[in-house]
Image (cartoon, rainbow, N blue to C red):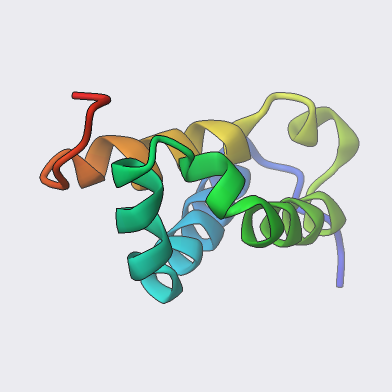
Length: 87
């Protein structure tokens, strides 16, 4: 499979992977917010997603951190409804 070379496609892939992390780990996300250790709680899942993303996009797009931004948008910003000390 050829590497993704466009910014739009790289952003879409990053958001899709982050959405999967969110979808399949709702309980860990809730506990992560409540315990203020979200990224530690999801460390393995986030890293697995990062490796998948890295394997699918060109190096220059990988360095632009679209995956990290997607994680913040999907795992943090969209979960403001969860009670947390963070908010």
